[in-house]
Image: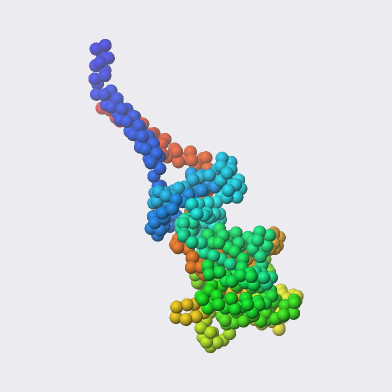
Length: 488
């Protein structure tokens, strides 16, 4: 026994025992700290240049003022998704905001309530008043000039929260009674109606033969009228304009400045348009520049854009596609000035395009009789009524691009409203006219950031770096220390 005690008392044994105790203590401390950090659910440190996973001060200031309870339901997402990392920061800013990850098989009631399929990846932003759906594809856009993907997740989430908590939804009215495209579920603009409603608007139809212009009308939409207005309807629309009304007019060609199928001229329709100094054509604009058409179709035009509030998110990041578009004709600058109208074209064809009224001829070949040059396809017209009032008309020489009419492009069937950014430019126009442009605009260049899910091998390598290597280094240090002491 005494001999054993003497051995224990030897210095190297005591030092080794002390070292082992310290190592055990450090390992236990390391594990305890990890458990505490995991339970605290701290926000990860964002080392990306564009701060992709960190809310901007602009969002923080806006969201901190939200007084309603808002829930963000994430369908098809997991805890590891970077979008969830960003979304949970809203909870830290305002305790009235809650983030929930939803499995459709576990919550079929929510999936049914919002019409979510099993494989969908989307976000439902729900307040006590209303909700808004954001598809995963809407959280990214593309800069065609730099070839970079742009992350607009924060912009979409923040604006959705602000949208569902606004006190009053804009009232959008679609004019009916003149052969316009309908907005019920089976009509050509049924899909557009859903998009507009999902953008937190009330959408209604309006028959001015049986109703007066609603005082609550924020935007009047005229979607491809094909017969003339009555004198009574014309008077009501003129009164709306004189009161500072806002109009979005989408018009396919072939009908204007000619006679209708019923033999009547569009006298009153042109009378309304003349208030803003414009008219629509009856022919079609075709492109010769292959970079400004889709599927080598001269009549499916990718127009050139001029920056304004409507196309601010599309100016460099996306494109729209107009299908069988006409042209917008403006009166002279002197006449515009007399009318008190300021014209701001923002969609044009290229200088290489041509205009033709004979739509039955071969549009793939330009004829000597065709008019050539750059033509106006989309325009903002602001009419000064008096010192305190102005009316705005946003005119498009195309309506088909905003429909769900099935068309075939490059061998596949699609709908025009879902091509390129067609949906976005229409929604941006509604927001512009109703003074509801995005409250904030946050765009983050993703550069070469890789969002692929880590493989099992990559996970093992990370675990090795975090746990195994430090332990090996500690043990190696102990062994080296013991060997050195024995050599003394």
